[in-house]
Length: 168
Image 1: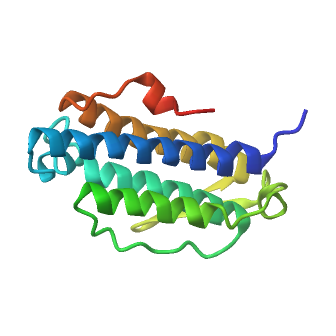
Image 2: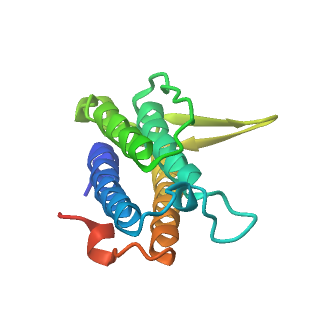
C-alpha cells in the first residue's frame, strides 16, 4: 500500500488547525466570562524555559505551511509573528488553513523521495519527503498544538480531548 503524502499532510493539518481555532473560541469565551486579561493566556508558559502559548500556535502554523510548501517544492510564505491576542491567533490559524487549501494532491503526492533541506543558523539537514513529513513535521506540529492546548487547559479553559480531536 502506498501512502498519499497529500492525505497524510494537508487534510490532517487543516483539521487540527480548525480544532485549534474552536479551542481559541472557548479560550476567548473564558477570558470574556472571567473578565481576564487575555495576555495572561497568550503569554503563559508551562515552564520558564518553554515558549508562551502564542508562540506555540505560531510555530504550529509555521510547521504546517512550511511542511506543505517544502513537499510541493514552492516558496514558504513568511508570516510576521506579531500575534498577541486570541483573535489574532485565530486569524493566523485561518490564514494558514486558507493557504493549505490552495494545494492539490498532484502537488504533494509523489514527494516521498523529494529532498527536503532544512536550514538552521549555520547548519542544514537533509531528509526524504516521507522522512521529513512523518519524522519531523507531523510530530513538531502536534507537539506545539498539544502544548497550546495544555496551557489553556492548565489555565482553566473548559476544553477536553473531544475539543482537541475535533469533528472527524
